[in-house]
Image 1 (cartoon, rainbow, N blue to C red):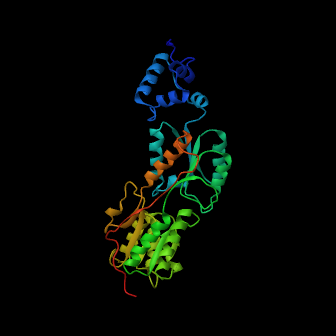
Image 2 (image 1 turned 90 degrees about the vertical axis):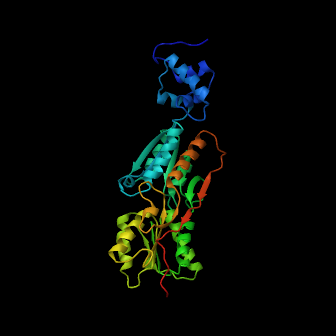
Image 3 (image 1 turned 45 degrees about the horizontal axis):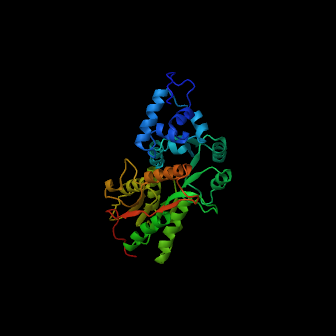
Amino acid sequence: MAIDRPNHGQGIGLKVVADELGLSQSTVSRALRNHPSIPAATRERVAQAAKRMGYAPNARARGLAIGRTEAIGLVFPLERLRLVQTNFVDVLSGISDVVTERGYNLLLSPFRDDESSVLRRLATSRMVDGLIITRPLVHDPRIALLAGTGIPFVVHGRSDVDISCSYVDVDNFEIFRRLAEVLLDYGHRRIAALNSYRRFRYAAARDAGYRAAMEGRHVPVDPDLVLETAMTEEDGLKLGARLLSLPEPPTAIICGSIFLAKGVYRAAAEAGRTIGKDLSVVAHDDQLRGISAADFAPALTATQQSVEMAGRRLAEILIDRLEGRLAPEPICEVSRPDLILRGSVGQGKPV
């Protein structure tokens, strides 16, 4: 017998609606949030019953009823939001799209100094069901910390710690190896590399890829041409100018980001060098909105892989894990970047 309570939600909880319909509280909760895993007919049936019974959702009560908060946390350094040029917003966009589609909430937790305390608090407070962490170090202590708490988590990138965990990564070794080999194929030998800080695992892998390509062609690596820097246009301009002012300047420069490449283009123009003729420039492109390697003049040769799609996969894997859709083994995905050859590469000078 149907329950009809026109009391506009007073005393009506999720369990009452679920019992009335003969469904689980988890199913009712998802249906009310238009979760795609619930058939449209069931969503409509639940919505009509909730309206008729005067059910008003209470997020805290719903979380207690189904044993989850239906929220995931993303911890990141505060300065990443303050950067004018960053790929973080695109990663966040991909994560946010999936979180919204799947009916979850996203809790953003910036930190200034002590990330570990923020992670520990989130992992033990039951504020979130799972966590996403980004930019892992070569030996990242956060992975052991989270593994010890038992909370589900996924990492944007890999670390060389001896703990299995789920991650989404791009083959960073291959990125710099392929970019270096293109330049070597064009006859370049004085090849500079503008990379991020090698304490980050992705930057260490790129450095190894660059060195492997050089050593594979028996070309010595000049330490003056291998620089660590922030991935910004201004740093590209500053370091590009420094490299081009050397007694033996490079004939080609590999840039770890499209923003660095933009700065190097400016440095070349100020030094009177023509890109694609006097200087070759290549870069990695995260396919960010608002800037395109194809729009550079000349168009920029680049490896490319969407960092926004990586954000989507991070959220999909974590939510699938929370909902029991995955086997217990970690999900480890490494994508291979595409390489697009454009006009920024020319023949190297004879040695």
